[in-house]
Length: 131
Image (cartoon, rainbow, N blue to C red; front, side):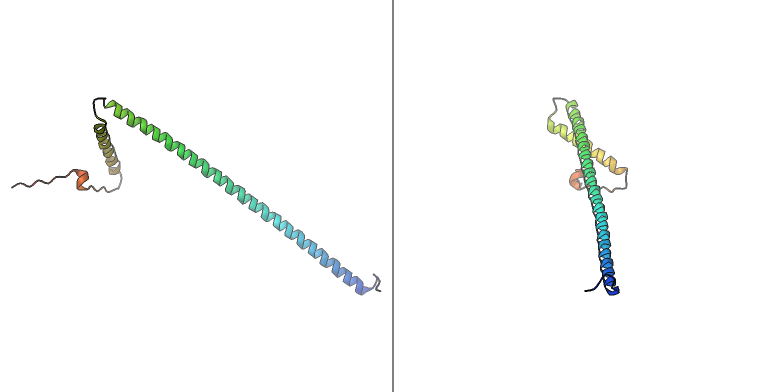
């Protein structure tokens, strides 16, 4: 049997201790690295959740704004049509309204660089031949 004072045994014990210590150190480093990665992933998850909440809030505000604009436009149209009087037929009122809307659209287009093309049906073009 070898005694602990034997240099060979001491060297073997030292190697085992050193190897065990190295393994423990590597495990601690790996655990620390894993914890850092977990925290980074948790941070990314939280950031993505907050982005999702922000997008949903923006969508909600856009919907509310669109509804408000639509209601305001409906009130304007209703007021316009009712001011034309009870004696005018709704079809005639709509013709006037649509003509004014076309005029507004043409005016808006003329302010920019857009090019506008009309078909003969849209212009109500007629060609007369004279003999």
